[in-house]
Image (cartoon, rainbow, N blue to C red; front, side, top):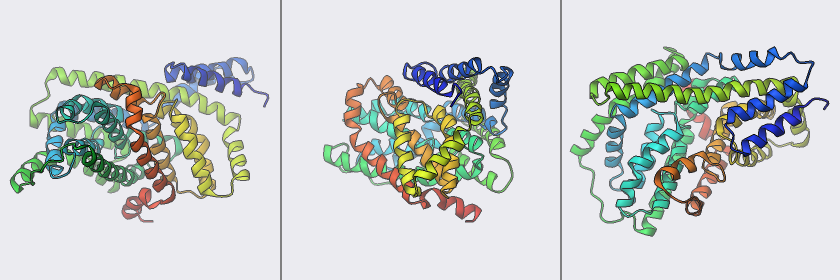
Length: 430
């Protein structure tokens, strides 16, 4: 290849490994290509950066980020946690079960795994330690359960994936229910096993009374209706996935008014958080758009597809290779960045093997989630440990059974498409 695409990729990877901001690493590699390739007008670089964020589906990102932030400030989280506490009361490892179930339910409200991990590290880990749970177990469980958030709709990862791969974001929202519930149930079983073995809240548990359940359920009904409103509205054609984000904001603000727990100061803080979070995502998207144009110009996706199809005859072998590759990449590169760079390469190959685009999207997103938990640069691991004070080496040692569980879930998603496609086929037809 007579271009400088190789040098461009090397510079980008070196900067990523040196922990430079993702958008700077990607932009630097792209700049080198445009500078060293005279035949390519430099104006294209600016055009691609601007056009990369001029996408209607990406408008959903700030909407859902804002909705999640306002939900946290409006007292929704507390009401959902009270409901989770009642539901999991009879189970061994009560607070551990609350941790998992809260992530599952809040995943339909916040859409950000890092926000979920930070919130629960502050709210639940200190309480778990008071109940006798070890700091390491509490931290690992909090980080692992936060992986459910990008799977349960409306996950930000689904919006970005759908906009890149031209896959229905509405279908991706619905498809995420299966993997999210799979991981939720698997984690609750693992928590019960470990809790019995170590004696975490295994004493006689109180029974759920009808009065307590009714009171907690009524308090949790309004926030838990949001995912139903979003999915139902998209499926019935009332609004698009992008418009659903604005609906979510209005709904969050209505709850804030009803509950009267969000002050004007918190409202302004929520707006600031929304701007900062959205800006960090959009900078990555803009930078990766320029890099994706370079890949397309050099026909890298086409060559990669031809190579994979010529050397791999079985779609399941391809999926296993992709799993290993994405987990390794996820250990070093932030999930949104790897998605924007790799989806244009891998999605066409998956299509050529006849793999359902919805299933491949779920496998891809799940792999990214595992990478966010894995050393040496797992963002979920560092966010959680930074708040709880858990040492990284103890975190990794404690996480071994959780990694095994995640690999089992990944294999189920890889070899059993129904986990990803059942709800989509049910609502949209096979």
